Amino acid sequence: MKTGSEGIAPFSLHDTVVRLSVSTLTRCVLSKVSFLAMA
Image (cartoon, rainbow, N blue to C red; front, side, top):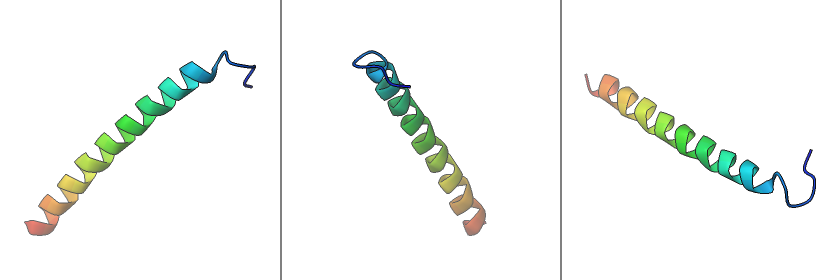
């Protein structure tokens, strides 16, 4: 799917956004789990 230099920048940007959203979701889930465990 990659054709030379075009498509690499958007892919890396998309990968960064995905990693940020995944880390945010993980943090939210972990905080909820720890809150439920303490309750």
